[in-house]
Length: 150
Length: 154
Image (cartoon, rainbow over the protein chains, first blue to last red):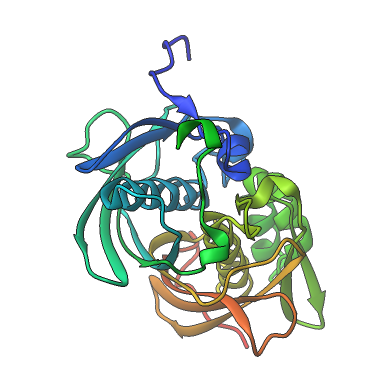
């Protein structure tokens, strides 16, 4: 538990990402990476302390969405259509969970993404996912950056 | 888990309200279990911390997936008593409508109860159950009780 936390910044404009402790490390056209540090209140089983699958779901959903936004390059409204997650193994209690997602195809309306959640080695995943996102899903819901960043 | 092992030892159904309250993440998220007879309805109490899109505003997609996963786990714990919590193998989440900043309700149904794996369908709604905001289909692994095979009870 004495490990130095990895670099990254909290996603301040997404309330649930903030309360989950979700940190974003990078977001480029090639993909996005972020993590959630372990916390006892995020465990799904008080006897084992293993992180609840839902935490991995929320992390992957958010990082996949950021990967789509980064691949689009412009600010357009996106919404998750579906998300499939395969849980490969239980997350190790006490360890930070990282996620990496890549948007590998964008059509006029849909973006396709795949992602992996892992501890230190992405070849030994905790979970993998595939997701599709609707682009311009709801113009009212465009997640625009603060005016100073435009 | 002790609540489940205790219910199994007494050959009784587990108290899902107590079980939901004993899961740290479910409690943190604000998930409650309600029983009407032997039917479970889960409730995700609205809190500003659940928002994923503050512009709409809408609940975070991950929160809805997690809520339905908890709903499915509680339903499997009820229908397939094994003394331990079922483990998710895979889940498919479909987002049908954006979820508004209000309380959300959930229900789950066992589609197929196997000896080791259970196929579950779960739905979340806000206004009316015929207008689900999110649905989930998933497989969960059962931990066989020490005294023999997991049996279904209706």
